[in-house]
Amino acid sequence: MSDPIPTSPLPPAEPLMPPLQPLAMPEQDFARPFHDQNAPGFEPPRHLALWRLLAFSPAMLATAVLTWVMQGWFAKGGFMALELVLLALIAFNFFWICFSVSTVVLGLYSLSKRNRDRPQARPAPMRVALLVPVYNETPWYVLGNVRSMLEELHQRGGQHSYDMFVLSDTRDDSLADQERLSVEALRAALPAGVALYYRRRALNTGRKVGNISDWLRRWGAGYEAMLVLDADSLMTGRAIARLTDALSRDPSAGLIQSFPQLIGAQSVFGRMQQFANGVYGLALAEGLARWTGFEGNYWGHNAIMRVQAFAACAGLPPLRSRFWGGDKMIMSHDFVEAGLLRRAGWRVRFLPRLGGSFEETPPTLIDHILRDRRWCQGNLQHLNLLGARGFFAISRFHLLHGAIGYLMAPIWFALLVIWALIGRGEDSSVIHYFSAANPSRPSWPDMSEPRHVLVILLIYAMLLAPKLLAVLALALTSGRLSDYGGPLRFAASVVVEILLAVLYAPILMVQQMIAVFRTTFGLQRGWSPQARAGGQYGLATLLSCHALETLSGLALWGGIATGLVSLWLVPIALSLVLAVPLSALSGRRAGKSKTGWMATPVVYSEPKITQAAHRYRAQLKRYLDVINQHPAQ
Image (cartoon, rainbow, N blue to C red; front, side, top):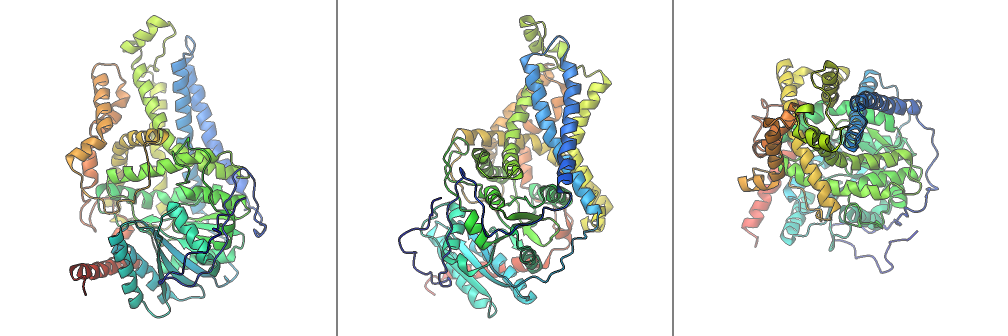
């Protein structure tokens, strides 16, 4: 196993950083299993095997039943290759749909039970570093969040100690100057004893992974734990303290992930995402926590890690293959780091009920698409690691599931194309073409038969089931409809969110298919910073971004009008042909903050920490404006 620590002297100490406290962080070898001798043994959670059986078995059984029923439709006259492909695609998609449903049901059951796992032991004090990696971010925005978290922690007190590090990889010199000025101003304003540090790397080698590992190798030995945050992350002092307590009480835990709640959305698309996260997300997250147990996942931020364990077990080497992802550097590092920690003998946990963990979401459809392309590139890289030595089965499943989330898009698209080709049975000219070549032509089941219609409706219903079931989580968690504007406004918001989700789903399917092809053919390069503010896009940009959806929608409408394509594809055709106006709608404001559509409790009753963040952002922005207007002063 190679050790990446340079033989040359470490870079000199930074003026806004504490003294160096180096820590070894060797690169891991995916070809050899590895166990950390410092990882303590632990007893697997009770009933974990049962939870996993309850999560996977219903999905597998339902998929087998549907496949058996549908193969009977196509069996008449023998199978053709096109029919077999169609059946395989339907079965593959249906399994993942059912798996989401079973996870939500598992989560609802879990939420209905009282949590008896109350901590008994008093946590030991820990020294924790809060790390905020930034790359060409708006300084006043990031530092406003930083100040609000530091002041909450200071006011809360407690036995743990916290230091905040802003780790800059910013390439723009003028932006970096504003970062430094903001940090210096904030350090002067913070109460005594509150530590804020800043470091800018000369080269952003390894992107975020390199940024974090550089901190670990130079300062990691001074801390027992690190809590990694994103530029848009916010966590209450209570949430940070509870994460630290959980890590302190569990010496076998290498990483504990919180469940970030979306905040700050004002656009139609942002509110749709925020409402779905707030209403449907908890049941899904609770179910996920149940069947993953101590083999959870890491989402790259709002998670706490044991420093010594992470440094010893999660050093990432370059990939040997460029086949998936087009880059030898591991880009979606979080899933892999969780797998490496578990491989080494550490527990990886997920605490979905922690509360007080926040992040923001892209405000427009195009901003979401641009972020999704980066995530697609990183997640498809994980296919290169499915054969890594020593990984546990659930860790491999996390890697596969992340990649499947994007590969589902071309699979769905292929399913729709075959569905359109098969068309409307006897009336389809495509079918007549196949009939001339082969008497055992492919044909879609006769939609005049009620049993066929019921099965198709079942597939559509299963797509909506996770959302509808997850609404029950409100009753199971003492949620009040008044927190969502009352019963009528809540019901209207649910209907609007579902309608918008149905309309945007085909557009996202096509865009994810584009992302997969861009990654596969090496067209997706780099990892540009996320556009967090978003905004309205011009007609030229909208047309350029959504040209394929629009053309596909027009082709589908032509097929429907001429009778070549099934009427069941009308909703998809409508969405695709309206891709440009729907994308323009996504950036529109969703109404006033307190009365707009799809508002959640964080809108009706804004948390104190977000109010403080808004206030501190405004103060820093005014300060930087003055500095920029009078640079000599």
